[in-house]
Structures are given as structure tokens and as C-alpha cells.
Length: 342
Image 1 (cartoon, rainbow, N blue to C red):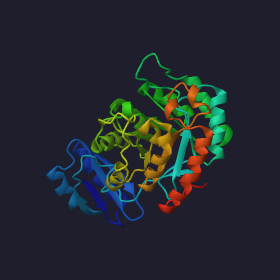
Image 2 (cartoon, helix red, strand yellow):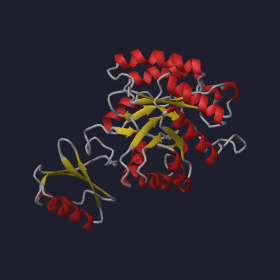
Image 3 (cartoon, helix red, strand yellow):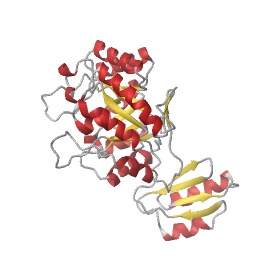
Image 4 (cartoon, rainbow, N blue to C red):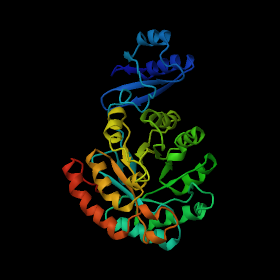
């Protein structure tokens, strides 16, 4: 449930309300918005009748509103205003479309630096690159680990771009936080709840990819794990789901973008690279995602996709990325949200 406070509610009154919530074995999350201040009540059973009755008559309370959805903190009921996440000078979820681009995996210093320069040159905002790579086969390239993190971080600093990379295990969170600006939780780890909790304890933005077979509600409940640990900087990423169709790697669920925007205040971006698995489908699906209201896109770019150690088939060359950025600008403008400009 949500406790809406009166505009004149005093700090001691707020503390009393929070204390009453905690005595019920639940947790109160205080949010001060531009229009109202609320306390979100979360826990195993946050709609206890006695608690609601008690809180409704406490000083400083304007009204108590039950939330019917299983996810609380990421719901529009909890927060009507869109969450905007600032990473350096970049704002994700604001009035501009953000482009995240880079190779699937960091391979060499030259590869990641060349890519970073191309991403910067053609208007990208955030550099991506994997240092820890989950692979379907244990014999495939699985990343450079700490050395890859160092290369990614140095390339980002060289060109002036924030960086994002995937973290695979709870024990690696502290290490990845040291080198990155955004933590990525991949599709295979969407329901790795221990990892979600650990990421939620950091104060770094977290991008949560939708699981390969996850329903929207399951995706939002996974985001709730991160939010419930106190980290309010969560970005959702639609990266395609597994369907009966075998012509593409996954099926990019464009409809999920406006749907999730209706359900949550969190920013939503699209990953057409994983969503299709084919480089020649990345540009049209990027345009479609932005037209559907995506707050940003994440694109795989590589200096030589034919020799890439990971996901070369879905990676754009520098020329293809430049063409995508040229084509994206008018679509973003026509959709009412131009490409983000610093």
C-alpha cells in the first residue's frame, strides 16, 4: 500500500508512521516527489487490515491507497513521475533518446579504443563492452575479466563516455563497481535473486535485461528486488524473448516497450542486437523501438564483426553504425523525443 502524506506533515509524524509500519514487520520507503510525499509499504503482506486502519488515522496522513500489483516500488501507483537516471552528463529516461554502443566483448586495447572513438564520433552516449561473458558453450570465449574491465574503463575515459558492463555473480559486484558506471544484469541472470540483491545494495545504476522466457510481471518483480534494497536507479532492457520462431535469434517484443511504460516509472531501453541476432535487422528494429517510445537503445558495434570473438553476426561495422545514427535522428525527432544531446 501507499501512504500519502499531508503537505504539512512534520518529520516527527513521518518517523511515527515509519515506526508503525516497521512494527508490523514491513518496510517503509519514503519518496519525496515534486507534487507529493509518500511512503511505500513493502513486505510479505503489505495490506494488513489493522495496519491500514491504524495508519489512516495517524497525524500527517492524507490517505492510504492499496496497491494491487505484486510489484510495488516500480509501479506507477507508487510513483507517477518518470524516473530519470543521470550517468555523468547523460540522462536516461528524460526527454532524449540515449544510445549505448560497443562490442559484445572486450578483446584487445586497440579493439575497444577504436570502437569507443567510433561510438563517440557518431553520437553515441555510453560505451558498452563485456569483460565477463556467459556462453551457451563452456568452450566459447568467456571474457578477459579484470583486464577487460580495465581496458573498457580506460577507453571510456579516453573518449569521455560512461561505460556499462555485465556482472555475472554476487562476488564480482564489488570489482565491477570499481570500473563501470552502470551494472548490467543479463537475461540469464534476471532471476538470480542473490545477484539482484547485491546489485541493489550498490548505488550504481543497474540495467536489468528481460529474461529469455520471462513474462512482463516477472521482469518487473526482478526489478523490485533491486529497488527493495534501496537502489532506485534501475533501467529495464527489452532484449527479445524466445518464441517458436527460428528465423531470428530472439523475437524483439516491441509491444513490451509502451506496455511497460504504462506499468512502471522506470526507463525502458531496447537491445535490437540480441533481439534479432542479425546485423541487417538491427537498424530497422532500432527505429521501431524508438518509435514505440524506448528511452534508449543498446547496439553491438565492432571494428571487424567477421573476426569478433562473440556475437559477430549481430554486430554493426562502424559504417553501419554511422548510417544507423543518421537514420535514427529524424525518427526520434518525429516521435517527440530527439536524440539526447549534452
